[in-house]
Image 1 (spheres, one colour):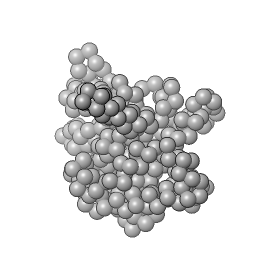
Image 2 (cartoon, rainbow, N blue to C red; image 1 turned 135 degrees about the vertical axis):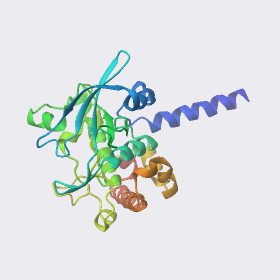
Image 3 (cartoon, rainbow, N blue to C red; image 1 turned 30 degrees about the vertical axis):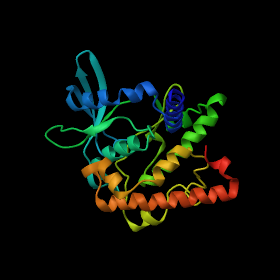
Length: 275
């Protein structure tokens, strides 16, 4: 009996480790998420600056929050409707975080709803000490050779994620790079499209407007998690933050992603596509 317990525990640890092997936030950071969610919800706002310009189309607010001795910045936004030629929605920021947690993707910073100036909106923990992918590109910063393999896999995972949620405006300023070369994804207010176009086509494929951008390698654990997604399951995770048609569109894209994975497996072999 004791041996059986040990085997079950070992399997549990193995499955958990596999499921989180592709996470970008560290285990320590993940363990602190409830603390940061509460911090975002209740901490005192001690400074506020509205961001404007080409990189702040929705005019979000950078808020400095304080609770006890803890001081952190956060980004609050409440866009809703058509802005700058795109459909914007602050609830999508929260839905993205909740779904990220449910899938154990763990690439989206803590994000909750909070009122500011009496308005509802999303507030996301600011991740310090990062550069954007655009800064990396503009400054010609090379990925350290030892990090290239993992960075490429993070990129494939980002494509799968944005395919699933139909993020039609992922650009290089929304991909953060930590000092140890982990990828953090921000800004999801232009996601969860539900039009026919986004239910019948994926964004990242061989036909991407910038050239082929495939989901070349993906974690088995992530693929298994999206396989078992259901309408009821997603609804229980995201609550009011997604409409029924938006959830159905996620499921339609899930099917397209699985078809694309099958195509890649047929072409390259399963061991080259799933890890």
